[in-house]
Amino acid sequence: QRCRGPWAAWPARRGAGGGHPRAAAFSLFPRDTEEEGEDAIIHLLKRAKLSVMKGELGEAEQVLHQALRLSHQSDNRKAIVYTYSMVKAPGGGGWPGRPPARGGPCRDDNAILEMSLKLASIYAAQKQHKLALAGYEFCILTLEEKIAKQKDLPEDVLPAEEKANTRLLLGMSLDSYARYLLNVNQLPVAQKMYEKALQISNDVQGETHPQTVVLMNDLATVLDAQGHYDEAYSYVKRAAELAKETQHPEEHMVLNNLAAILMHKEDFLQAKQVYKEALKQAQQKGDVASVQHIQEELAELAKRRKDSK
Image 1 (cartoon, rainbow, N blue to C red):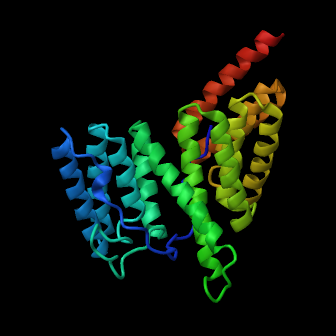
Image 2 (tube, rainbow, N blue to C red):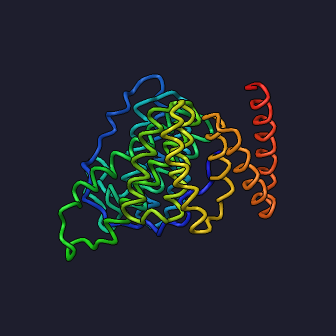
């Protein structure tokens, strides 16, 4: 059972940008029988750019969402990729024949990348895989490039807090991508994303931070799903210790995961004890869904114990 923590406790991630992108030409869209649809996409992109220049990021997000949907409906891969490049850089570079807008967000501004991540998450939930993958790739690659550029900048040029915020946004992107990959059963890649996100959370916020505990638990889940029970146990055991020590609000979910992994390791007695503690905490917190899930797991445990005799 994965914890539900969506990095909500992480600080606001408004970072400094890293320069303007090159102006892009609309020759990306070949003029053919789909000309009318492409004109509509171009119109939406222009509206989005104008909204960003005005500081209306909410409006820009809605318009870019429309452009992505239209690109997807027409199955125009180039339009999809170009629209996502606008999501990460809607105010940085000029349109063909025009200079970059002054005062607009740079191409790797954290606020713009957060918008891109949100759109990717929306399409992941809608099972629109091409759009989701394009969005996640843009976010992660752009943030990795940005972090590499910022690494050696002195404090008087870029405060440590700004560097940390950019790393945290990368961690959130990796976590979101990992959850998506886990849901589509791409387990080895999901594991790598969780490992990177956990490393960032541990480095920036420390081992006892609530999100670090969540990521330990989720990494254990994906390891367990691949049959790596011993490695999964080491992560979830530590997550459970930290959850208890810090009174984590989702300790019962971590305990549930610990019990499940113990069951897979065929340590049935210990698994039963942990399940009972998880059930007690879930009942105290009024988490009806977890109570039902743990009761089902206890029934499965009883069946396995009987079959093993």
